[in-house]
Amino acid sequence: MAGAVGVVSALALTGSAVAREGRAGERGAATGLRGVWIATVANRDWPSRKGLAPQEQRAELLVHLDNAIRAGLNAVVLQVRPTADALWPSPYEPWAECLTGEQGRDPGWDPLGTAVTEAHRRGLELHAWFNPYRVANHTDPGRLVATHPARLHPEWVVPYGGKLYYHPGLPEVRRFVQDAMLDAVARYDVDAVHWDDYFYPYPVAGETFDDAAAFERYGAGFADVGDWRRHNTEALVRETGERLREVRPGVRLGVSPFGVWRNEAKDPEGSRTRAGVGTYDDLYADTRRWVREGLLDYICPQLYWHVGLAEADYAELVRWWAGTVRGTGVDLYLGEALYKAGDPAQPAAWQDPGELSRHLTLAADFPEVRGHVFFAAREVAEDRIGAMRRVSRDHYDVP
Image (cartoon, rainbow, N blue to C red; front, side, top):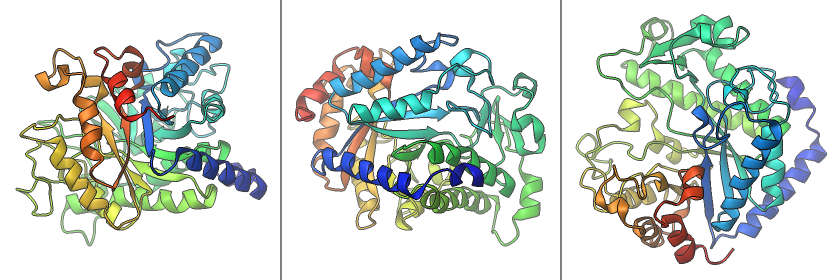
């Protein structure tokens, strides 16, 4: 890691910071962040399928960037480390399977480098989206490339819920995943390091995340395993933020957690919701504390519910999150469920093309809300019922 960081000269950092400040200035405070996620895991958004030729992959990527511009957006959040593999030539982890269909196989081009250059050429910010701990969407280490760190260090890996995860409770794991992620920051002029909602995995009925031995070794001084797990997750956030400022000052750290911290019934400081999951108790991510302690530059809760939903009302959660960030200096962006718009399996509210536009109208009453990010790029392209066009017409008419 030290070698990779060393090649970044002070002059390059200064130039990058100036360019970044310029892009932020062009965006302007009144405009706010207008982002879209581009998911690569399981080829969700891009590439459309594994094994495309390099020129086809590149062409598809540019279409997503151009779609963002046409929709009036100013940022893309590109998933560059979907399953402990990489969309750049990483010395730590293999090339991503979603590119060629074979983990570790060189795709013949540099997707992240191209994405940064082409996004900035269009005036778009490029937030590099990493998943810290997910190793595979299966439980067979033998399916990983032979040189994968998870095979070289099987003691780092925990199978759970049909997937493989790096162990968040091991200090050497936390250091390694930081090294792997920050390598991309050292190499490329990304505007932010972005994490989604996966820290400790979502609970699976009837299964136990097997970290008892690590808790016995490292958990002295913690009241219970939950407090220890929350400490582990916060350590990753805190340490990454500190190292990020050393590697490339000016790059922001943002997290997009599940939209409910805790329900009010469990904690008087929680939201007036009845969600079945909360980040504090189930994912061991005390997102409210991270904001209050200034460990993040921005937080982008995934408010993937409609206005008026009894269990998790979008309007209530906007109010709660605005109050949470108030006075902290942490920017609040709201994650929007574009993928639900027009999906016949969703409630009636999501069949209305105006639902998402109403979200932005409602959020405009809260000065703490500094932007919105839409999930995801495939839906920006398809726009089944015109929900994204309505948002662009109603709110993004000024470029």
